Length: 134
Image (cartoon, rainbow, N blue to C red; front, top):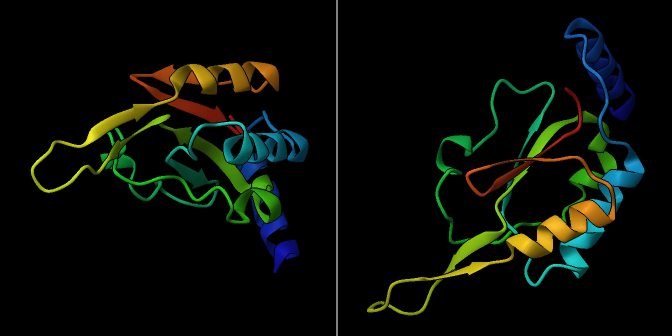
């Protein structure tokens, strides 16, 4: 199946005349840093080349109340198919029924990591986009 997916990705890249921005090493460094160098695993959404739109993208412009599942193997096995990933280095921490959630943020830590590993990114209203292809 991976071979078929790689062929499909190669075809999409050629048809859309895309250029690769990330490689397996960069994806691995990003994943590792999100797990072990951030104060919390930041929420993210990602879009694969073969998808029309990313799941949850409509709602990702607001703070969310969940953390990212960086331990999942998407960046290990399918990084070659990631068009982009958007990271929001903040989340809403639940504090009980009567209190507003607390905003927990780690924007400066994320920027430091992206610069440390020379990972190109764009920022838009607190959301950091890293392109696999463009």
